[in-house]
Length: 239
Image (cartoon, rainbow, N blue to C red):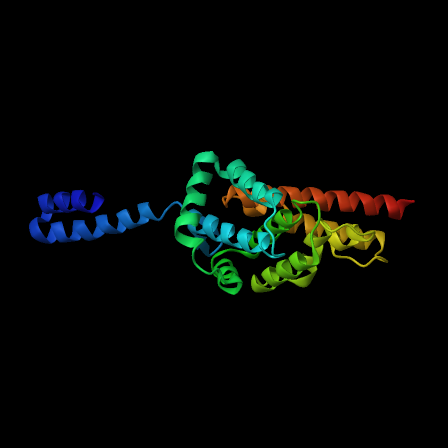
């Protein structure tokens, strides 16, 4: 519509040449308006629908990783999408997935490469955090699920320390606080403080401002885990 209106305006000023020019300029602005609602992070751009469908496809791979489909994991994903996008939008995403994508064979390497090409590193960290949440929905992250999550992290080109940090938020061990902050168990108080500042900056929700709301929620959760880990280590070091 924009390009035709521009063509008419152009014709009124410059006749036929003006109509052609107006049509071209209007077409350009029409293109911009159709593609303006996108998730942007620095030089990366991905349309929300593509992001959400690929996220759902990755979720399905994690749910099926151990060869069984747990209702708790299905509920976790559905409640997550409803909570972030609203029931109407979530229903639309699931319907599109079931009718257009679910029937196709989903390859992990292809899915992860979409995110590598079209999202920033910080967004991919949030995706991994979300996928860990799915695996842990039944109260336990199995070895098979851990292996699949490790493959996802590798495919999305995430650093091993970042993988171990997020893993420590779900798989509890005595040295979890150290793993979350990515420091050795013999780290000094100053090293712990330095690590906290680094991790807080990496996971601060403001890093994802303007991105998909689901990823912002993940950042907020991880930011709280980083704070808890820091407080735990500070207490230990001061005793």
